[in-house]
Amino acid sequence: MKVDRPKEPSVEYVGTELGSYELIEQIGSGGMGMIFRAHHTRIGRTVAIKLLREDLVENKLEVERFLNEAKTVNRIGHPNIVDIYDFVEEWDRKPPQIYLVMELLEGKNLNEYLSEIDVLELAEAIDIALHICDGLSAVHDVNVLHRDLKPDNVFLTDDAHGRRRIKLLDFGIARGFAEGESSELTDPARMVGTPQYMSPEQVLSRPLDARTDIYAVGLVLYKMLSGRTPFDAAEVGSVLVDQVHKPPPPAVRPDGTALPEALQEVLTRCLQKAPADRYQTARELREALHDCRSALPSSAPDEAQAALPSLAPPRRRAGLVVGLIGVAALLLGVGAYWIAGRGDHAAVPTTAAGSASAAVAPTPASGAGSSTAAGAASQTRLASGPGSSGASAGTASAKVDVPVSAGSAKTADDDGKGAGSGKAVKGQRIARARSKGLKATRTRRTPRAKTAASPVKAGSGSGAADKPAPKRGRRIKERINRGGTLDPFGD
Image 1: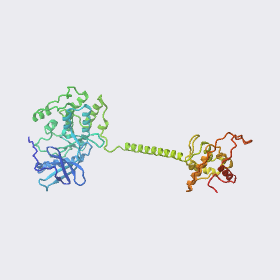
Image 2: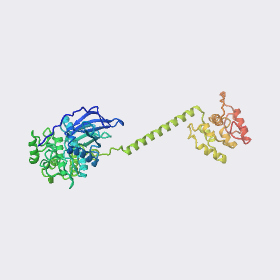
Image 3: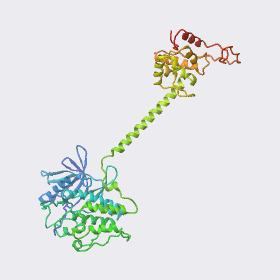
Image 4: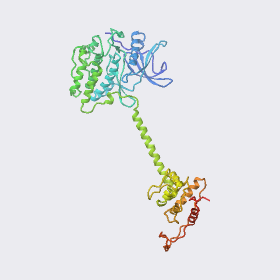
């Protein structure tokens, strides 16, 4: 068996440029090359660069495998598969460079994650396995095998919404299994795969299909649940023999606790030596794992994780936010309008409840002109009910003159007896002056001294004290008797 040992690169790559990309730091390495964080020197996009080892550049088979990885990933196109943007060959460089431009993932692979926490909770381990099954389903749908599924090639990252996302990496030795498809991308003298995660048929170099990856999923799940692999002999040869002949021992938790029976049955079926005895597809395995997840007493299945939610922002939530903002803006506007209205009432005297109906809303006997005035007034703010401040006189009478009969005028200003009637006329006067662009002059009225009640005029019937009407009231009465209007500025 031939084992390739990576050679040290002849140049220092960090800080150099490959094409349009500057290499910032090395973030990984593998059997075929090194991986760097890089950014595009012109547009600033940050990516990962997978650089083929210098000693493999002249090997046509290795170059073909490198290109095969890019082709395979782009055939699949799935959220659980790492994206590859470009395949670049630079033969004019010394030494020549061949590299892949890939999606940069922030996070850690499953092997690193397990080294930190040793073993996963049942629910978390099953959720990761569900994601792996989703990715493998997409891989198998295009008649491709991964053939090197292991914790190092399962990457844990977060999507745009902060939810965990699993990405399958390293399709360098992936191979098609459709009938008649070439499989000449591996060297017969070279072992392909990782011994602890190889299927029996892989060890024996027999024909492979999707069930080979199913076996590997069982081994990865075994590791997540128990903290070890079922076959972990010190010698590679012993591990390979055990993969072919030795039944796996039941998986147990680090504290010696057995797994739930249904979950142990799933593991046992995945790790059957004969492919016909395993789950036949990744989707079938996924259904069995989902049932195990549902049976856990601690929690229900995490459908958001298992069903692979879209990375696109949810439209309904965005619409709800916009709607709430609109409602808030409307409420603020109404509040500001109400506050402004209260300020107007404080600045301009308003009619009392008793006089508002006569000075603003004409009586039905007022005629056609009164109806027009009432319609205009109804489109402004009107007084509403006794005791309310109502519409200011300026608002009610700024655009219309309300002709009324003598009886109506007497209601509006019955010799100053109506509560606040003088304020109503004064407010009308100010508003009309404003509407005509005139400057209204406020005159200070001398308050009448309070006197003892005078005898009531005989025959008046009103019960009011015998007091002389204000001068303004007499002028208005005279104008009304001549057929005029209530316009205090009329000639």
